[in-house]
Length: 583
Image 1 (tube, rainbow, N blue to C red):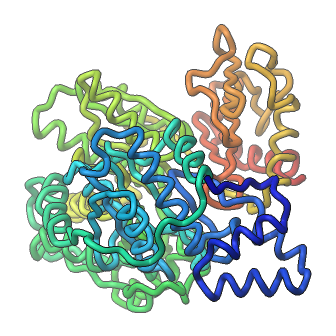
Image 2: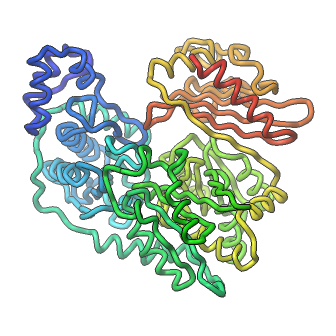
Image 3: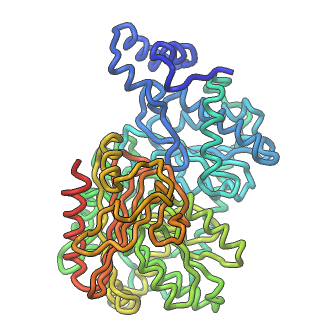
């Protein structure tokens, strides 16, 4: 069995690379660095090996084991295939579904992944042409496949790419599969295939037809067409979403007129108008706003490049306001609640779920309306599995969301889907237009009914050494400590002028409020700490600080309720940036 580790000498890593890599360009790049004795750059290319993050691999496209390239793609594909064959009944016969987006190398790497699975005896279903990510998990459940692979880096910069992996249940992989796959990959790194994939099955038309015949109709409910078409501006941020959005919107008839931001409508792997094609990033929607102003439109809808996320903006009193992920989430939840009521469903058996870093307003809605509620750690890999576990308890989850613009509005797909979310949102806009209301006004109505929650999220870009130092400063305890050994006094005692009354350190599995100090969320390998604070007047603060699983950044999520929420959030942000995140 051919295997190497990050502890292998640099020469061993280079020799292994030159032996296995069949791409002349990347082989020659590493060979030249080695011949020149460029140790520093070789170290950067070779160590550490790109590791599994959020449901797969994501990183810069470059030669060496620390980036994504032909060899790493083949090694990953054959490792996943070996693991699934050992752990999933009839995996080879049920097969794999493989899709890709429009990024540089995505189509090539989809073919190489198909070759890797084919060499292991798998039936290989391929989505030819550019796909949007939700088609892969949908195809996995539709075809009853054993596994799904999507080649995409979602909203990362253009120099990145990735491999997202779905299990047989149509959900992104979680433990122990992620750990098992990682071990399977490195157990034998010698490539058994390369870039020739024979005997694949093209399921593009079947899956696309099925998606638009089932998922989209499942979220379109009877509505009264507006007197005049609803006018919207859309941007797909140089991604693949445009044609899928058009196909979905067509099912609404002539009730909506969508104008696409011309500079960003077509897929472009270089993302020429935005360095970070993430709707959450400041400035990303500027072109859409300018185009909307030119067209006299005051609502914008957007998808990220692989169209699994959804964003929106509204022009109010002459100024554009981008809705936060939590604001969109609560409005979609209210729209889904209307559907529950219209269908006369038993609310005690209907669930809505979110993540621990998202707004607590969804909990308030479900409690007031008599629905079931639950929350989990970040990521749709956790939300999707929570949907399945609640189903076992006879609870149908109709809506899932995370504040990072991810929404699941159809029970037919177990991952975030920016296209179906857009369709639900457009139907909400039909209602608001008929009532001459704004999104801002509608949100105010929801706050009146369920309570005022003000959120503020941001991030700090930094490398791993700095991230480790930040969290060490916040917890003042050894990461090897057990929950029983930890005390709340080892954490900050105040945040934003409020007293910290509870700490949940997910990295260590610690919860200061639990009898045994063990968190029900368990222990997570990623860095994440939650603080719950309050004052004598009843104001409350929820603060979560976590390291991103896909990018070199630390994110913080703040939410306040009660009096002077803006002042509380500002003071908390200053505390974090000056005391804890400024190392």
